[in-house]
Amino acid sequence: MSLYTAETRRLTKRRFTRFFVLGTLLVLAAIVAGMFFTNHKASPERLAAAQAEADSQYQFAVQQASKETADCQAAQGTPAAQNYPPCDQIYQPAREDFRAEWYMDPMFDFREQFGFLVTALAALLAVMAFVIGATYVGAEWSSGGMMNLLLWRPRRLQVLGTKLAALLVSLGVFTVVVSAAWTGLFVLTAQLRGTLAGMTSGAWQSILLMELRGMVLVLAAGAVGFGLASLGRHTAMALGAAIGAIIVFQFGLGTVLSLAKVPFAEAYLVPVWALAWMDKSAVATDWNSCDYSSTSGCEPATITITWPMAGGVLAAVVLLIVGAAMWTMRSRDVT
Image (cartoon, rainbow, N blue to C red; front, side, top):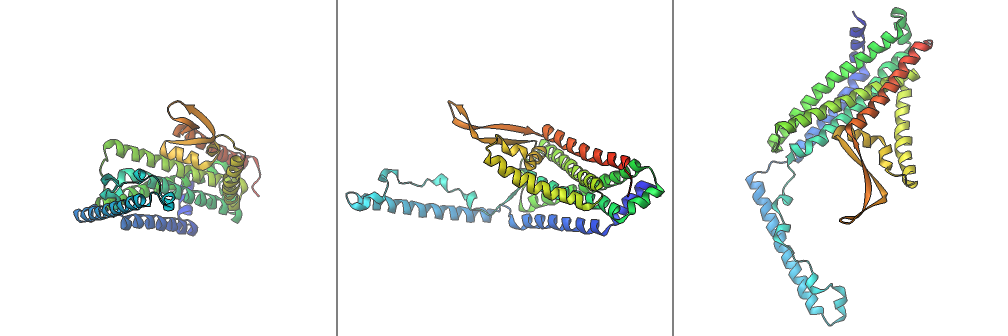
């Protein structure tokens, strides 16, 4: 049996891997079920009921406005007049302010809403990949399995590289399968509980590219978890680094930057870069600045983070951590 095959079997046979994958799938299934049962297709009956509700609300608003105007006019010349604005400024409802679609049950619009769901899928799978990648190699170090393996295969970089390859290939295959199922289930949801209107070939291509970027994010998360655990020779190293990054570098750093009124504070936080990668761009705003325009007045300055910029940062982080793990694996004793 080749080393790659053995490592793939080791990864997929681990109980932690199976339970964590199962838990992730249950969360995803709950999201699909929630979207399915909370959305409804716009049938003629539902449209008629919504139109009736809109008409009823409009008539009620007209009656209230008429009563308010009459009370205002009656109060003129009395102390109660101060309780009213000028009578001709009292809001008079317009028919277009009560549209039937505002009174309908939510309907799943695939084109408008599926992009957010792809981002949610990528985020959940990235968390799963990070934890599985960290525990996969971390358990080998803490249990002594890595030392035993190196007695059989003394080529350190080949062993660690093969483990990483087995992890990334497995994560890639899993992500492709889950993404395909995710897309299919929401296409079915749109057909039964919403609409697929506007889904041109260009729209499908955009979704496919977004899912590919999501897969890259998942693979990067798995590689980072793997690299951190290998650097610390323990799962706790990766998980501790993740918790520290969330608490210190996200909440703590975000608070400090806001108090210090640092320009474009959002641009220093990971979520903005992740969104820029998934959505192709993200805007960071300097709320303490004033970019004056004769047409729009004082507007805060903004910068746009594009997906190539986010991809470059993501690649640099992965290469730095995985490269450091490979370097330490080669340069120090295995104890």
